[in-house]
Amino acid sequence: LILHGLCTMAYTYKSIMGDNDPSKIKKIKVRFKLPVKPGDTLTFKGKTTKENGTSRTEIAAFNQNNEQVIANGEAVLSE
Image (cartoon, rainbow, N blue to C red; front, side, top):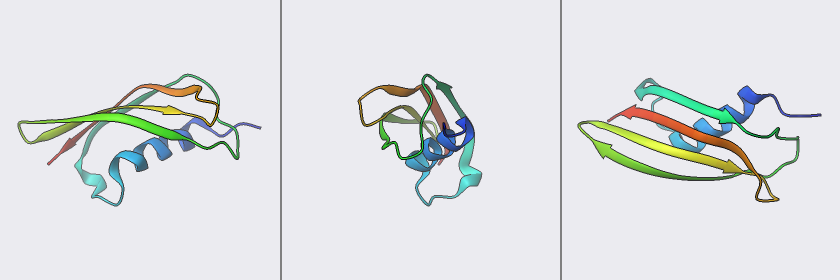
């Protein structure tokens, strides 16, 4: 069994947005690098920059074996 990619993407989105207003999302993208299995523990690492009323977050996700499962993740949000 593997976890559907859109579910993995949703967890990535949640790690960036928390409980903030979802209407602020202008762009979100990820590259699925490896499958995620039910029960895997994901760790998200990223960097956010702010400029001209928008914030841009670059993000990657790793499983409990430190294997990268999400690469080249990016979210652009309005402030």
